[in-house]
Amino acid sequence: MTMPSWADPKFGTMKRAALWLVQEVGVGELFTKSQLREAFPNTSQIDRRMRDLRDFGWRIDTNREDPTLGTHEQRFVTQGVAVWEPGKATKKTGVTVTAAERHTLMTQDGHKCRSCGIGPGEQYAGTYVASQLDVARRSVRMPSGEISVQLVIECNRCRIGGRDLVADLDDVLARIGRLPIYERKMLAAWVDQDARSFSETEELWAAYRTLPADSRDKVRDALA
Ligand SMILES: [Zn+2]
Image (cartoon, rainbow, N blue to C red; front, side):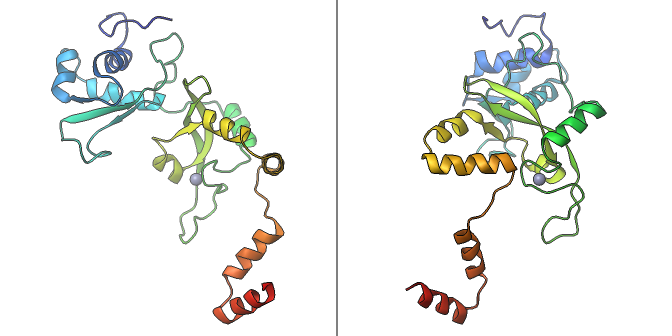
């Protein structure tokens, strides 16, 4: 599919802003607020429309994310979903799912945050703050290189911290391909259980680490 021009008035502002970034700015390059305003002179909410692109896996840094930038500068860091293509920009704000879809996602994701593993209403370690699980968007880099936005269960805390996270399916698949057969089987078992099991050696290591110095010496002697 050929890329339409950013100046094509048949597209909405967010789509045109995405095309403008690709065609006029370029990945990794800087642009200023005045350049943006010049390109979109009659659009009062151009900043906001550009921020909406973040929901589609686009990363645009301001000096909040990147202190080396000036206050009027932004950097186009990562190109996300091709929002100008038909049907790609359908979910514009927030994650709207039906109760049934939400239930399916919760079941698929094992009723736990896929980022930190916390369950619903559990307290974060060292705090009295209880988790709240909800549906979040995760940008996933596919083996084709395209960014796909997929839904995942995440807790409040991870959702706030993980906005710019792009999961890399391509990298995961490539690294699995390089695993020795034994480790591959071990990983397959963890994937089946959706939990990591620990070997006897790893459990012993964890127990050893909690021992006071005198007892650690005894363990060292026993191993010698
Ligand atoms: Zn979490």
